[in-house]
Image 1 (cartoon, helix red, strand yellow):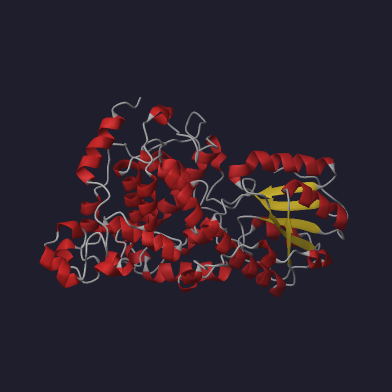
Image 2 (image 1 turned 180 degrees about the horizontal axis):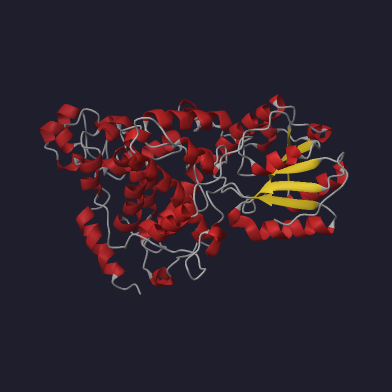
Length: 481
């Protein structure tokens, strides 16, 4: 942390909010409040590509509601939220000059460290102190290193090293009172940012599933600890069950910290410690993904393993569109893509199945899928999303080998044996026998008629034959490396 100290305790301080839209366990906010100075809580809408968030369409919807929640929480504590647009360095400098600010506080966004250092240098040249804090991950990426002092490229030793550091720090309570500043009255109108979809409002179903904001995150965590943690290890692979934490969009927007999630799982009555460990491993995967992103900032656009640079991808626009709309003819794939449309979210197991289908059955570049998920997921995360797509493609660090190709038929039958998940998102198959729920194309005509299914009309025939597609993918892989 680099700091320039100021003696004047009457001047206000800026807290620059980014992917930390919460009051509790917010190191930058707590430090600013402890100064006793008025706090200018600031959120800056930056241009595409400059923001600390991917801010696809689904996340824009979430951000709108999360900012409303943050503003209400700040006002309840005595503060307010200032919304401004423009390059962060220009906005921060302008606000600091106008309000006589001598210190800016923010929590690190590790994927933009280099840019933030440049902003800090510019502010310091103008006589404005900068204090940057850790808190968006379980541990600083630079703190988890191999014996040779290098970043890990394999998760298991990373996890062991992370555990060796000890428990994450205890979460901090939210400030009880925040001294506001009159400059907040100059805020832009959030509605003018046009973050919400209109004509059509495709996000309308989201409100039945999600409650953006810190209170919603806290409620989601409490529900998971009470109802999901006890069966997490096995249950998290069954998409029909409500066992996963669904904390990912709240973590992506910083409405809850990973330390809060980690410690909430401590000492839960009647929960096997193995379940707790498995949940914490998933939190650690997020840290690991950021370790990869910090080392390789182009994780979303370039193959981590350059031997994949010559891989012969194909692109069929019709097939890609069918995949995005959940019209591939493979029910477990289509159910996942329909869930994505309806909820801005997809079950973790099904994400792997749908990604494998796009990459290895359709031979479409993983970057096309990464872009689509970035735009449609409410939990899109610059590290997790890119690392996960490269993991499935086989081109990333600690990746699944390319020749591990998910069979969508067997995956559906294994993890959704009664077809409950498929029926939930593909109502056109609701009356189909369990035997054929994952293979409607193999059902006899009388079975289809009884279920009201007309292949090619009410439900599509398979885009490709999985086994032929698998052979094609493996043949293309022989030319890699």
